[in-house]
Image 1 (cartoon, protein in one colour):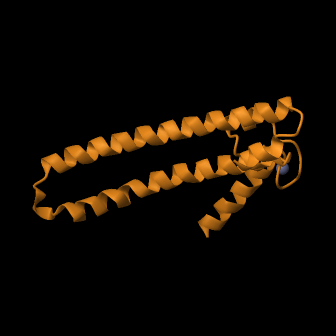
Image 2 (cartoon, protein in one colour):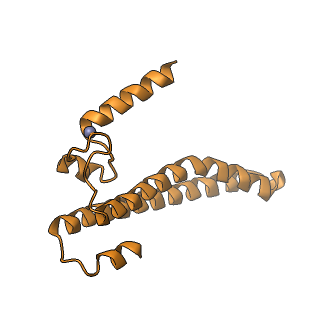
Image 3 (cartoon, helix red, strand yellow):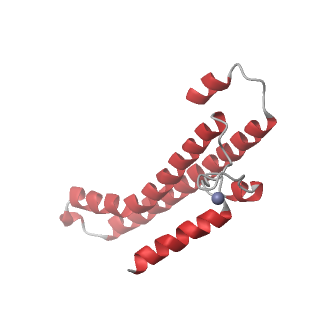
Length: 136
Ligand SMILES: [Zn+2]
């Protein structure tokens, strides 16, 4: 992996390690949640399928199932991708600083959302902007 190659000659940094653990924990959490959702989905599909007559054809059925799954799988994979980006920022030593104003992001915020790119103030401004755009 890219980051382990980069960090190999550096002296251990307790903050880096702390952030790395935090992000990895979140990744596991998300992966677990995704697995649960998928299993749930598979069970529901199995029940649906067994209660239906199969003259609809298996392929059509499968396609419908896939399109239903996509929205939440996409959401989870997007978060996982953001967490990978966060790991890279840890290695580049730019992790934990707001991408907008450059201030340190509160550690409590990072613990809840380790993929956060902005401090609370900037995040609020961005969300406000998005809401206005959606309203139009
Ligand atoms: Zn900020």
